[in-house]
Image 1 (cartoon, rainbow, N blue to C red):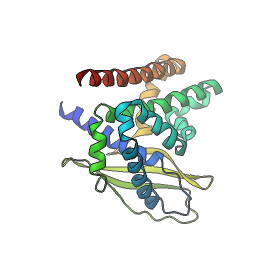
Image 2 (tube, one colour):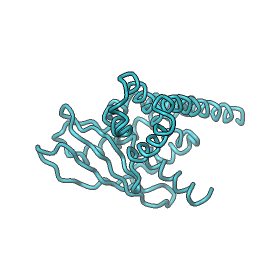
Image 3 (tube, helix red, strand yellow):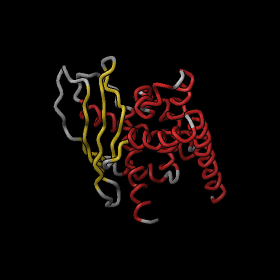
Length: 233
């Protein structure tokens, strides 16, 4: 694995871990957001520990857990709108709905697949749960509608410390996540740049169709790797 690939792999690993934490970051607005994230992260590890055996038996279970338990706490409408940028304004209602659904699936399957490539990484996370993430306090008051929570991820086995931040805003009295930044890389900005190029070249419908195909490939890859693992036993 070359240096660039290794860095991308570490960033995806960190983004997965932190995105899951942020995706579950719904709480009453009067709770300091960094304290809420700390509490939610510990709760997440408890869920992973409980579900560990079932995930090893059926890798797709991790997709289901993330989508059912965590994604309701992301404002996917805002995130999808930011990701498409100016192309959201010209999209039809059907295109917006289709894109938002496929983008949600992509986030779950792409980033979770980093762990499913080696389910042993879940055990590694749990073994290092107390030292993986350090959240930095931030000042908020009743007038705060948006905030950014900074943190550091300490990768296991002496890996580098990776700076991260979460962008959250208040919606219906709860903190909701709409972007994650890992080592200077914004999830929203990264996808917006990539998708804009594709829309300019081929149109929005072609982009949506490629997301459908990519999501199916990710699912099939997960199934294939699990089948190979069972054959190897």
